[in-house]
Length: 297
Length: 306
Image (cartoon, each protein chain N blue to C red):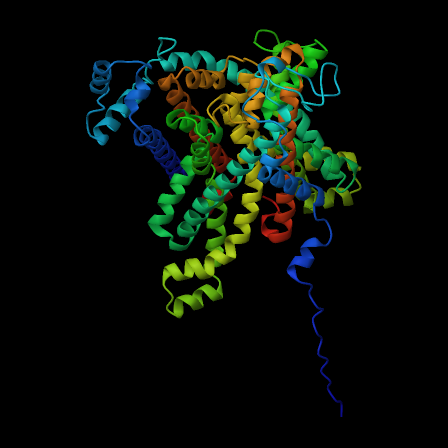
């Protein structure tokens, strides 16, 4: 008589989610750069050696300290109004961070809400939302943002609003797709049978399942939004002067380009690049980590 | 097939309608359009006259009717600054934008496609990593900054290329590169993934089993088919390029529609701003429709599937 033995195979202990995040290919340097920029933005008042908006007209166009004519008083030189470039860069980090994060949050909430409504409710709601999304997608984003900025006039919060209502379409599209497949899953059907209201299902059962996707899209969108803000400021319809926005600094600095005042354009651009590149690298990594379905996005 | 095309055209018209409503409403919801339609410093009497002339004292739907009727007649309004019809102004600038976009597109394909193929053949090796870095940079650098740095290097320090304006082919090199890099990144990504997909397919395996040399398999069997999605994207991107070149055109003082938009914004020339945006949106809606229809003509699965 053969004795059948059942071997209970215990699944290998899975490390906690946080621990698994740290293993392997975590983009440490980009994450560190973002943290540093965030800290600089928060503590800008303490870090900046000079007032970013008030300069000394006797100290215009000073080059960085290592060039002839530069001094350690203005480490990275001064601009056309004698304002300290380093201080403006430091305060510029604050503007980029504030605009970038709030605009991404705003567009993310808007797009996710519309995506869930469209995907879950279906029918005419879906038709209306998707047609609007298509139209919005047809508008060249930056051109539309310039158009809106030209109507409402420049201010920091107007820019956030404009970028928010310009860049929500991607969330709506992707999340609607996810919701369509979630809708067919057992747990959602059970919830319907159990008599949950549509509102409860969308908030309790659908939303937690698409939030990862929204976070991934948000991280990837951060770079797009920061570049858009810089472009609007560069064109003079973004953050109004004398605020030290990086895009505005580039725009002011371009006149000095032909006479070799490189620091006025190269430095703010490097800041934008560092921030956007880091956000993109982090977003790419998150995409693969949190949501394998989005890999080909 | 006919039904599919009819539906596509229907969607397109609907999108154009929504586009016009969006632009129309945004102008009116966000404030008094009269202040946008007159030149700064106009008197109250002028404001009232303009309000009446453009029917801004009428209900919204009547206003929309007036707006659409003039659009249908090709009337985008009169530019305050240039004192000419906006449409005329737009059409005079469009060839420059198309020219720039075409060269930028050629450049982006010349960079993107070969590097994408190279990356797909050498997955995980040097060229793949290099390509990834290159595309990431292309997507992360603001194009206007790339433009400014190019000017600094090639015009200021080396003195090889003219920094702004139009006229000679030399004027085109830097703006085309600044505009094309971002798109080169997109084209490289798509070429790479499309090549990888084709290289994994049965007929490529068969070609290999037949003993064809690697170069022939890649060049003749894989590349040709992998190119289809890339060229489709390139077609759509060309139209997008025309419409997003604003910052690059401003940096290089290139006289295209992007610069026209910038001038419109700077001189508070509202009819120009509205006209450029409307035309841009319409252009993209129509091109998307044409691409969808062409796809259905080529591939029956699409028209039967939907």
